[in-house]
Length: 220
Image (cartoon, rainbow, N blue to C red; front, side, top):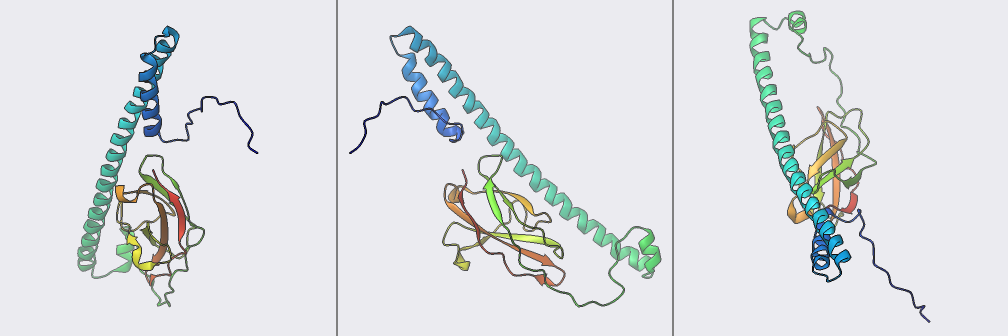
């Protein structure tokens, strides 16, 4: 036997998305403003204004996100260009100094090992996790750093996490990463769908085994 409850107005939660709350505030605020009750109408003006304020911040957030993506892309290009310039310079330095190791080191160039070593592939990445990013449409992923890794690559799927063929390589904001905490912009086709990730560690010996799938959360 069900118990009858006294119904009350359900509170709007800040845990809901800003766009959803904006729509709710503007709809209810507009209705309140049309009320013949002057007190309710006055409150409606405040509610509508609050809804419009959310909209302003949503637009600012979108612009900031777009600017951040452009800045990240420009930073990665400058990084790539810089590496090419110094690597080209290193070839010329080696030619001019006749491969004089001490002179090359004195200039600050990093040197390869003087002894041959058996290179080992990095181990599997573990303890992966994901969360909603600071901006709408972004995802933060985290995992334990691998001591022997130089960089990491990331794959993502919105399908069955056990089907390797469904994973796509993440290349935005970069194809590889040197940190174990990464923010990734999520395309519209992948929003509001459970996402799964795999991370692979890389070093001079090659790529290690991919991590186990992690995630399963929706990004808004």
